Image (cartoon, rainbow, N blue to C red; front, side, top):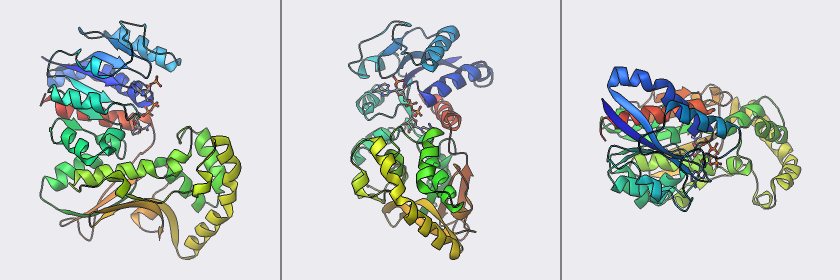
Length: 359
Ligand SMILES: NC(=O)c1ccc[n+]([C@@H]2O[C@H](COP(=O)([O-])OP(=O)(O)OC[C@H]3O[C@@H](n4cnc5c(N)ncnc54)[C@H](OP(=O)(O)O)[C@@H]3O)[C@@H](O)[C@H]2O)c1
């Protein structure tokens, strides 16, 4: 039996779903693969719980209950002062460990780099470290011990298809197009159904589809980071500032608080209703699309034929189409659930298992 120590940064929606999945899969994985996954450290924004011998099933469940009730995990076991994630990287004491980054923070990059230096592997659902400089991306990914499936398309195997089915088969990718924001998918299919933009934004917030400040989604940066990760996976040396981003609101609505934004957002309703109607007359529909072609990446609103793969996409689903030498006239298309923490958690667990053989 091989034991894999797990160190997890973040125990929010995705992080809790990952821990639950690890607990549920543990016996099966021991039986089928001879692999034992053992948490030795977990942390949230306030601190960490550390146990070099591995947390029991019961201890992990207590942490999950505490998080569901809005508490921190600090104090449930041996805590540590939250000065840096670097400290807990050392807790595993073996190069077999896997660090899991399921925060939404840029502050994990140094700890991830340290983990890779120590010989550990790392799995990220967090896009931000991979959207820092191209050099940081290459240092992490070229180690061969970093996987990041859930950063794009949640659990839909976008990164594996690109790197393991296309690039590893020497099938050069000419173009990638896709919709990979469930929030913006929800908004654009709502526009297609003649709902008002401001009402759609308010409902998306109420349904928990957006970040607390919806401008983080509407500004397009989340999609831009995903496009950047795909571009870099293909070896395009792009920086985030080089991705052309078309936000869904004008610059003058960018300042002020969330309430100010929500008070003002109805001023965009007529324009979006007009654009949706024009698209409808042309047999098209609006979608927020990422396009990677010729070494460049751009994200923004496009009017697309209703019968195209992206035009047919509905609601929060994600879709990505790869155009390569082999998949030329008929692209390789992946489509599936883009919203919800369980798809992302499944992608993280699949990455853990893919790395477990190599650490
Ligand atoms: N939600 C989805 O469907 C989905 C899909 C694909 C990818 N993702 C990505 O997965 C990541 C997590 O998403 P989520 O929805 O789970 O977010 P979340 O619910 O906000 O959870 C984030 C977690 O990270 C912790 N955290 C924040 N800063 C930290 C720091 N500096 N050190 C240690 N822990 C820190 C938070 O601590 P507290 O608990 O103390 O606040 C929280 O536990 C994000 O990067 C997101 O983009 C999400």
